[in-house]
Image 1: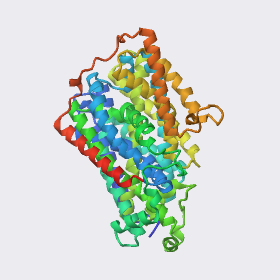
Image 2: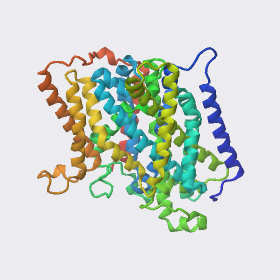
Image 3: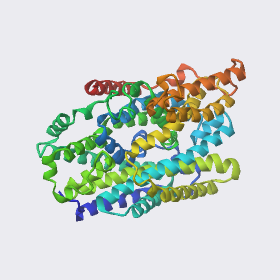
Image 4: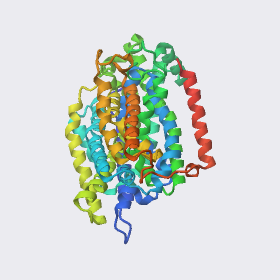
Length: 550
């Protein structure tokens, strides 16, 4: 065991960095006789094949939140946190079948653009400003913080330098090349991400079993920490409020996942850049299958770390170096970085490259989507309606750079935050139910009006705040007191939908809204390949929950 990087570790990591920058800049170059236009920069010329879409979706999604934050949650509460990944696989199938046909048929650049076509420019602007704020102050900052935390823990780089380094790395190719550079480098990033994650899981399990192998390692962690393998937590579990039992399967988890995978710009933007709807749906299917294996990469190492830390025999064999930055329930996010010191020279470089790939790919995706929303929904709408392609692309680059600088200044302030993955989910959960309610009714209920959507979006915040802060005595109904945040999301989306429905019916007296989307069953027809793949995903999910249902 060594906590020091060797020559081959540095060599592998530098080779990875050079490869990503080289590919990113190469695909970013202007083709001879063609100047990069808005479609090239923001939608990769609408030329992405299914395998690039699927891998890019995973690369954009799997970041420091998962490698560091979800491993920390795996250390603290166990496999139950994997519901975010496994339920996401089912959500992706729904998005591919029911949402994408509408989005692609309307030729969208951004999700707020759909709001304008379905509702109004005012509501589009409200949501555009909200998303820009969310990406800059929550998503970008948390990824920079967790990434720099990993650098600090693993190789001793001070946090501020880690923030600067990661920001410059992501900016080096994404600001110049746009979505094309991001998506094509994501294919490489996913290879490093999966390979490095599997290497870490393998060696962590091997360490737990004291060299007896992976299968024995699984047996050991299952035997030593059986409570960490309960997918459905009961009320006696101290983490029940994070993952409230069966409510995970039938309640708020759907709100979080449908919002994230269906209406999140930096995720859905990849599918909008597909060659065709069929290519986008095949890419979604690939991403769904990849989501099924992500817990093996990000949650299992956290459980293994928990067993190692609580086993005196293993601790005794770690030596002084192994006791450095030891994870605990109070500092669970140290679990994954701590594990990396057990990797031999060379493989440590691979694992570190995987972590960097996860961080940088997500940063690049968020930057590109932030600039897309600002440029297409704010700049071209209010500042320069007649902006040409050159001005549009330049503004996209400048706005991304500004967003990165702001996030970089805020990121170090998150130090001391434990279980960052849960923090991100809870903060987003305050606002996502209202947005989900607006989109779901806007897509599938033609009577939804613009006025009702605005009122619903605005009232969803105090509704969510009530469930968040309501102490005993505020309500005579115990269901609405001290509500787990996931249930808060479920209740909020239901009450918001009721508000929207009532206002819509009162305003239009039961008539369809003039901007309602006409939908027929033929609109959602999918290929046999998609149908078979979706059925396979569902069967695997049923098997997994049957095995780990406790």
